[in-house]
Image 1 (spheres, rainbow, N blue to C red):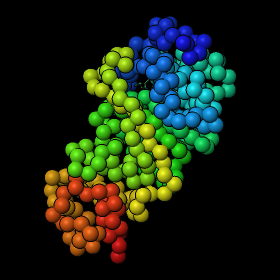
Image 2 (image 1 turned 90 degrees about the vertical axis):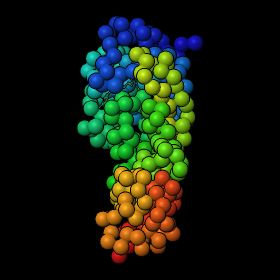
Image 3 (image 1 turned 180 degrees about the vertical axis):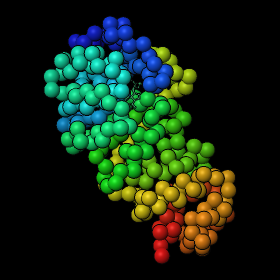
Length: 279
Ligand code: SAM
């Protein structure tokens, strides 16, 4: 069954000559039932403003609107997509605002009214950078309630990784310190046009009102980055230079100086960050 009265996405792409550009990370979703399913992973959309990055020809945008989003603000860098996106605005009067902007250069929060959900099939080249920005705002809670984001499967696994696994690192700590994070869906390459070489996954993150364990955000981020920078080294070596008496501080945090970063839980890193911050 059609989700709206607009033309099929293949026709939209032909009409507007939207040949995918690799440099912009363009792998389009053309099945509107699939884009509606992705939109539903974000939870109830009614009563929410949605921020979408990279709407492209508008498949996910249409899914979000068909699923009842109050308003969608969509940031697209590629000017070629504007006419196709205007047709969607016309079909949903007053509900879709499209900005022909680079998501990395715009303070998008100012266009949105709370509560906000972020939903996007992200361009792979800027996806991790945007995620880290959304996870490290000046103030917490952030401008968004949830993030529902498509990533390369390998990046999705790094976001939800647990200690002891190869994927566990800074991204897992950043994501899980102040959010609940889970993989909501995985998608094979054939779901996209053109198909990428890798599998993809949708990650759903829910912002918690407060961190799971107390720590200073900057010091936690710095400690974790340094620990994982040399992930095979023992903490007493990888964290050398962070503080002159780092070994005592590691012990005071209840950790072993001979442990390696990938063995340390989120709680352990927060305890360590508190010790690093102490006088
Ligand atoms: N949402 C569409 C879909 O699901 O079919 C397109 C997804 S495609 C993976 C990524 C989109 O992000 C492309 O339309 C691309 O032009 C756009 N894009 C790439 N870099 C961007 C940036 N820095 N800011 C905004 N959009 C960007």
